[in-house]
Structures are given as structure tokens and as C-alpha cells.
Image (cartoon, rainbow, N blue to C red; front, side, top):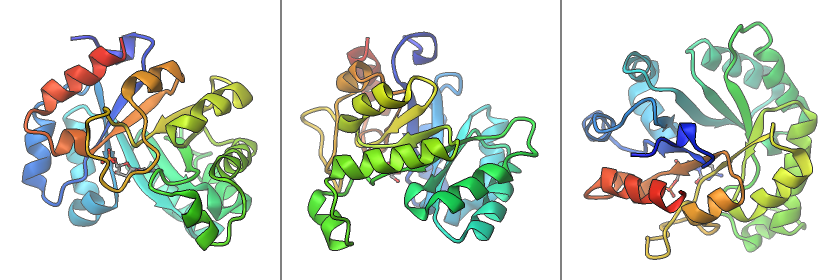
Length: 236
Ligand code: C5P
């Protein structure tokens, strides 16, 4: 099988959104840690905590701890430091937490020899323009994403999480060093669930997205490896 790590295609992060360890391990046991990255979000972290991360590290996986920090600068500074102490590979904060919060998160990583990549969530891929209006944002979804991308770039973050359609513009504006991570990956026949801004793996490659986050189309699949093969093939 092709390994995305060695080819010019987006690398694959699997969103481990399970409600119990047994189901998560059933999938993890099928995965090669030199090909796939794992994302631990609020659900699994709340259930299984740091020990689970240590266990996955022992199995050789790089972990994206997607806790999407959003709090006052001092709290985010301390939480970021605590997360980096776990030896994770990537960590997320909400760009809408503002400049001071993001700079604090960045500062918290200064003392680490090998700090995790610090990335900012711009707009959740579940959001529609009408949802933004409801929370008082008068910009279009694209304008909002570009504004938050610039802000997090100014704060020295390593990249952003953003919907696929905006990725092309962001690569053009901020260059290759600024990493783009895109969830909402679907084939045309896949179920959307709660996602609104979706993109196919093929388009993700075309838009030069660095990492795709793949969740339910794998975790809910009867044959996750076959599905992953299809994703990789479609990005060739
Ligand atoms: O593929 P699926 O829709 O299941 O992927 C959902 C995963 O992507 C969840 O873990 C969710 O937290 C994450 N995510 C997202 N939108 C963002 C950031 C992360 O859907 N902006």
C-alpha cells in the first residue's frame, strides 16, 4: 500500500471518536503507526485521560490532542504546557480565543526541545453562514476563516484547521510552511452526519492540504482498512 508520508499527498489523521477503549483498540490494532496519525478529542480524553495517550505512544503513534483550548490566556498557557508535557505531536486551540490567548499558548511551548505543532481552529466544519450570524459574526464564512487564519499566522502558530474549500486561498496567502489540517472528508456517497463543509480526498490533494482528518467514514465502517485504501488510492 502507498504510504502518504513518502508521497505528495495529504497525510491521514484518524479521529478516534469512540465511547469506549475496546472499540478504539479494535481499529488501532489494524493501523500502522508509520502511516497514520491519531487524533484524540474531548470524548476519548475525558473517558481515558493521559494514560491512553501514553499507551498509544508506546505503540508508536503520533498523537494530535484535539482539545481545542479556548480560555483566558493564563489558563491556556498552563493547559498548553501540561499537554506538551505528554509528548504529543500536535495540539489545537481556538483562534477565536484571540491574539493574547494564542501568543500565551505559543509562549508555553518555548521551553520544550521538541514542542508539539500548535494549530488553530478557524471555523468548525459543521458551521454554516447562518450559524455565524446567530453568534453575531457579520462576515461571510470565508472572510471569517481568512481573518482567523491571518491572526493565528501573526501569532506564530504552525497552522490551522479549516474547511477544504478555503485551503487553496490560505496556501496561496501564507505559503507552504503554514500547515493546513482539514476535517469533513467525504466521498460523494458518504453520510454527512453533522458536517456541512465537506471535501473529497481527491480535492484535498488538489488543494495541497497537509493533513486530512478522517473520522466517521472510517470509525463507522465495517471495513476501515478497505476504506482507508480507497482514500489513499483516490489521492494518488
Ligand atoms: O469525519 P468526521 O466528520 O467524523 O470528523 C469529525 C472529527 O473532526 C471530529 O473529531 C471533530 O472534532 C473534528 N473536527 C471538525 N471540525 C473542525 C475541527 C475538528 O469536524 N473544525
